[in-house]
Length: 173
Image 1 (spheres, one colour):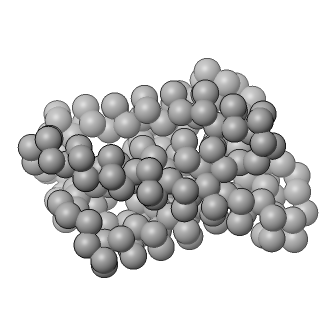
Image 2 (image 1 turned 60 degrees about the vertical axis):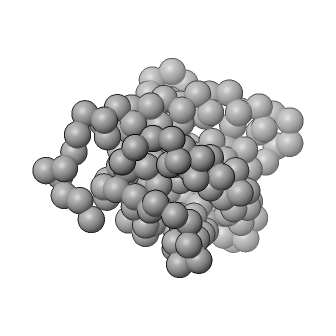
């Protein structure tokens, strides 16, 4: 993995672009899905779509965390009461630690690692949101709310992976 000495202006620009993508999705797609279905599934799509694309494009541990943290701060600035975004920031950090970085081709092992990272981080983030920010019981958070977030994370995979593969074709490393 590349160290901090390999951070370029291109990578910083990609982090900024993915952070903006995170914010736009969380300001529009997530709330729309929650209003229509009363489910957090599109909120997780709003988080994992930019995160999966980030880890495919930027081979640095910390890039996805940066996207999640910067995106969360901007979203909180624009929607001051949306403290549940801190659960998505937590999920982004966990996802960043567990996922492969800078893959050039989607192989079976890469797919397994990114799926595992998505499952675990979305479940933990969903639990934190349900238990800490929605005042749900421990049982409800573990058995209802966290699995709904996990489902949203899994829905993101078939959306983000083809986008990542296409972008990787046209953006030089």
